[in-house]
Length: 516
Image 1 (cartoon, rainbow, N blue to C red):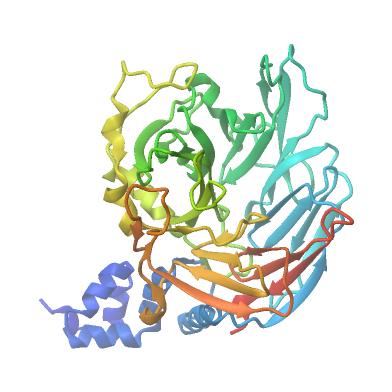
Image 2: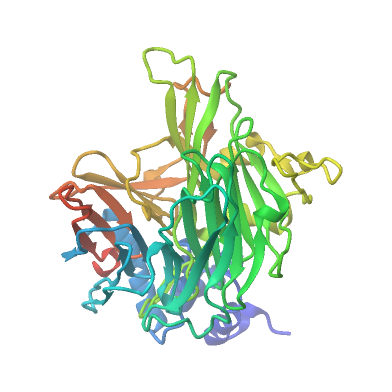
């Protein structure tokens, strides 16, 4: 039997092309012959570097050598923040809701819907504007790669303390404003029961799309009171989860979909935690609590004041003409936590804000079996039903997961707009025309990787919080300072806001990947 290294190089490459990037890297360390085969093959190098950059191939006909060149140039452009062009795009005077997904920026003032496919080096972009979509818009989510928009209708009715509120979510095609052809039922409906203190109001309502799922997270009151999670399969037109049936854990503050089969809740209870749930795609299913990831232990006088989580969008397909796109498992989550104490020291105001950065793959690893699974149900006030499995069996303490998998640090600046994180990158304002981009992906220059952050100067925690998630920081001084920043696969977006109106001009710094 012939050995692999005795085969012609073309056959070796063909065989090796069936391996993932980790196996290819192992092969490269076996012998000099295999090392040179991998080094000289653009297709194998592309497979390795694509994975190391947290990307996946979009299935184009572009030759591997050209794809590899574009990938490397893209990495260089982001590392150096080598901006190629600047485009200024007016977005109108009011912006009640907005989205940035798949290269498209969309906004609504409550009646209209404007979707702008942003320009690239090879495409000037285009805009679709509807003066009215036929219903008042409270919030919306889009996935341009499926031509779908989910619109939460605003009924504009006064609050009632005696009658339920009937709420509707419309699943429509972006291009036609008609019911989406893949949606079996639209609108999707639910009721908000009246409450003795807060009536039938929806104080917060955040809608999210993840492939064939649409979720809505709601709460009552100025604080997170009576939170509720609803998740539908919008293609089938069925409600697969309503937390009003099973209840949510006490302390629930925020919610996000991790993928189409799992979600995460943040909890302010005790020292704070991230709770990971698996989701069944069947009507009226009960999610399964897989793992509770604990946060650092607090000093007795401190409590969690707010606990939000944000990440880039989930879209079903690669954006048009994209040679590669981010892998969902490599998406970065930014967890923003504010701690409060009633006994401030040293003249501070008693509030300390931190940001924690963690990859989606960490959560998915626990969901896929590294965490111990238990099924938990809650009674009507959110307390654990101890007659079922003990929820403590699934708790992972901070020291067992946090130090190696996260970067925990004082918040850089409060984000005014969302979509400041995409893929593995986060854009941060410095309060000056200088911006920082934190990149938690592969960096070929190890000297630029930040290895450790310690919060030793803060009295919030009982012990120093030391974390070791590598991060590369790029910095650039812009000609102007912007009100807020957003980021996507290929762009840095600065927003200019005029307070004489609501929101003024979208200033777009295009296209970091096209600066190759």
